[in-house]
Length: 389
Image (cartoon, rainbow, N blue to C red; front, side, top):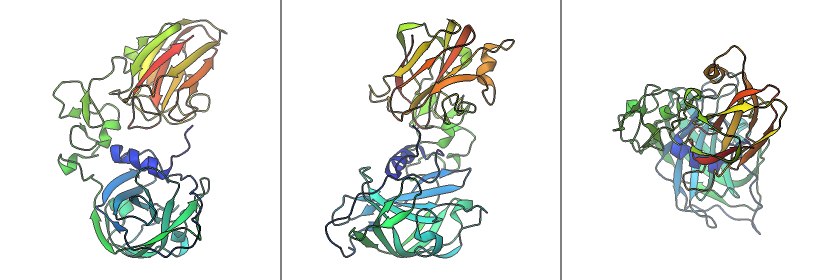
């Protein structure tokens, strides 16, 4: 089920993908406070800054840094710097921005937001700005560069409502004074070893560059730096493409208990638009996708379709889905899949996040059908077993 993830989980993915999958992260509620009030400690400073993620449509963008030092009761933290547009797309800065007043005093409304949470992904404690000033040299939303001086920053433990995003300080929670820091960071990850201009330029997928190129999650992009022709790039490594990457090369799936084993690792991102309807998967499917063809289904016969095994091997950790596309008289089979958007999705499953999927499908028309195995997140892929009975 595609509720937006907790910030710690979203961050861990964006460090791999530098992707474009989300807007404001949804945080689960933080835990309760400690037994008594605490004075702020001064042992937490901002480490080396790096680009995290962005949404090019909404212009949301963020950077992150590990903490140097810890809260008195915490493991090391990730500190994120998030920037959001308003309805009028008004620029943020340049100039000084008070983090503790107006819209920036609450995570639900802030345009400049600073969060911290444990590096181990545990979001039971979350910290948000209580005081401080960010003086921007330029607007990070428009320039996609974070150039600023951060002064007087205080982070305090808060509850963040998972539905409204409202942040409420915990009276007995911990807090920290953060030493002042000047930052100058662009949107290219620090780990990137290829030419700066090659990262996320929408021209080609550059592989084996030390960090994931978001261009590799766009359909049909040429892959650079792989020695074997026709390879794909997955997690910054060169891999073979699945043979059933498109409807034109779909693998035949027989009805029965055996099923077919496959993988979306290395698959192109061919099919997305049209799969998000409630009669299909109900959500965008940005992942790499592969296709199966089931021949000769009987009208009004119920079939159970199962996608399993998505967590059985180390390379199979992704949020899978599948969609069933039906026959369209007078149209070539490939055109059913290649329509933009797809209009013939009759059923789908993306009900649970990071778990197996199943769906009962009863065709009203006899014929051959396609099943697209896909995924919600653009930077993920893995192995699976697909069965129709």
